[in-house]
Structures are given as structure tokens and as C-alpha cells.
Image (cartoon, rainbow, N blue to C red; front, side, top):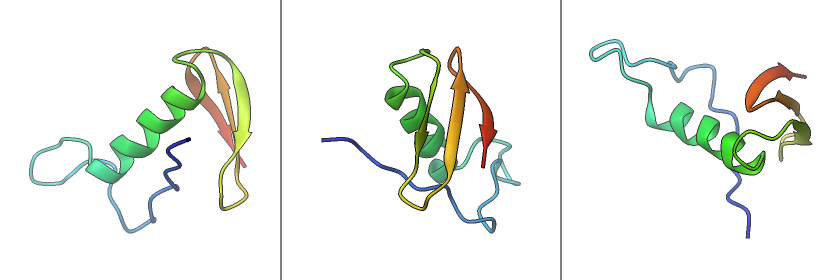
Length: 64
């Protein structure tokens, strides 16, 4: 079963202001993309909220 993590809200900062570390929500989102793309394989997929994420060599190149 796939672990689907939705894109965090715009209210959630990518970096926490007090520590400059990545927030848990964004970490889970990016790690899920890494896992869904077979750890670095290129491709694209659609999230549950209808956004299309394109990944090239494990790097997100476009979210539409």
C-alpha cells in the first residue's frame, strides 16, 4: 500500500524559523516523492489533490 502524503498547506513553512530545519510535513512530502519515484528514477505522478508532479533523476522539476 502506498503512503500518500499531500502537499503541505501554504501556511506550513518549509524551514522552521527557530531552528532552520525542515518541517516534518515537508520532509514527509519530499521523502514520499523520493520513495514513489523508486529512489531517483525519472517520471511523473498525480497526487490525491490532482496536482501533477514531474521528477527527473530524483529531483522535482515541475508541479502543476
